Length: 419
Image (tube, rainbow, N blue to C red; front, top):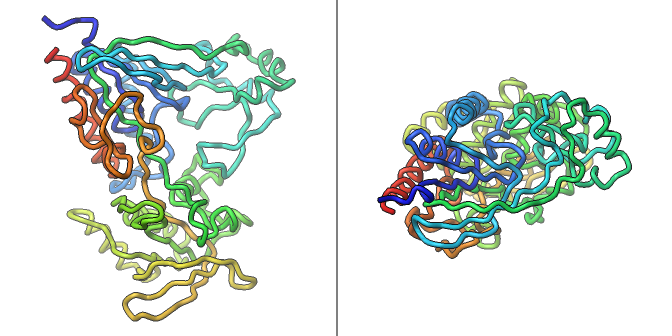
């Protein structure tokens, strides 16, 4: 007979693969714990302007999943939490979770009085540092749970007490401390997702030196109505509309000095973002510099549609260097590999298509599991009872990680049933 104490499943990470795994397992009748390091659920999908290939806002899909979580008593989630320790074996794992203080309790109604009383500002991580927010903040407009957070710097400041007194619901706890929670689970789904490759390491592209060189994830925030410019795509340096935009593919990818592999999604992501520009600026000129275009199966139709746009030029060649010159703006030096000619092309805004780096490459699991040479978890069956889902297993699209989450949920349930 199964041990009812270990009939539960732990899901680490609450992006689309983690949410899917958790909800599918819970709706199949199993207790599920979700652990998320951010103060909100949804992962990087919440930071997108549009899904691909449907080109619709991500909040519709996320809200459906959040409603399923709210309606299912079998799902319990922890935000601002990390897994510190996993021991045991399939069907009988002991897990230690570290809950970091948010300094705001369950009484919070999201009224925003704390933010109104706060004068301290911090970088807005949700917008990749492109603007600032109050140190008493709601992570983003559609955050779930809809609860404020106080930055640790605010807690240490002289105005912490003033912010606390501004809350009419006694929801602020300045003495909240980190604490550990012990769980016993039967299986684990690891879905901690990915991070964009650090463009600061691409020293020939001027990221961090030239404000109008941004990354593809920053472009998503610029285009979003919840972003730093309320959806208006403008140059960060002066807030002006760009007339020429360059998308640089494989920025750090397929490069032995950075990410040796292809992330598979970057070409189509840049094409998607080119449609953002065309919607706002019908006369804008767009360059897409590429090595190879990766658009397989049904996605090739989207590529062909974008390629038909006379204002979008696909330029086969890898950009060697980006500089900023008076009167020319940003200048990209690139060889046309079709003609072997060298070109210098000016642009008002450059978008670097940085690749997907699995979070497991820098934050491995606290239990021994196999990884490949790039830090991805090797397979769903690398260690009995622990299953990879989503972009810690392979770089891929939102639609594919949903399928991956379902597959991981089935594997996790099998582990529990076998016990």
